[in-house]
Length: 170
Image (cartoon, rainbow, N blue to C red; front, side, top):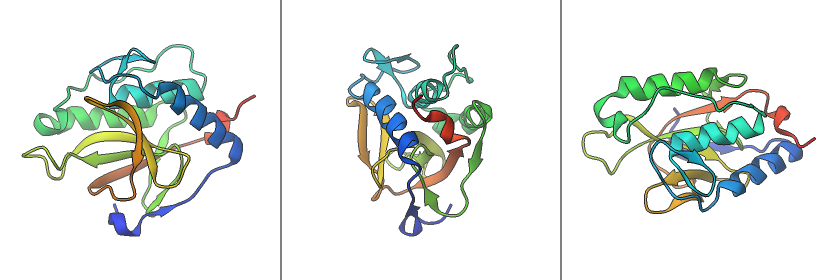
């Protein structure tokens, strides 16, 4: 991944942005609860991504991935990687972004800088928001919030879901 300083923000079409923003706002304020996926009840960072994309892609049954413990990146990077690989295969797939760009709806994986022993391992996943340099994520004590990624250090990888045009409201 290119260094954070060289990341460039690009938008996507207006209708896809409106759909993404609507779904993300519907999760806002949902409390953090490990392993859960229920709007306004509880969700973790991975389940927020799954729930958001299931709604955007109009998936009828909830998408499933291998269970990821809170500290999977610390103790079992293999489990965390398996979850990410499974997410990449869902919906219409997702590509690894190698050109240093971020677009609304991209999955942004960061390392847990504050957690001892995991300076380079992926530990947290977010969804790039519609406004430049924002992301939505679920975090303990705050729940689902929108934050800035402009100053985020430690972006490990960005994944770009395919066929975002299918998100458009009908």
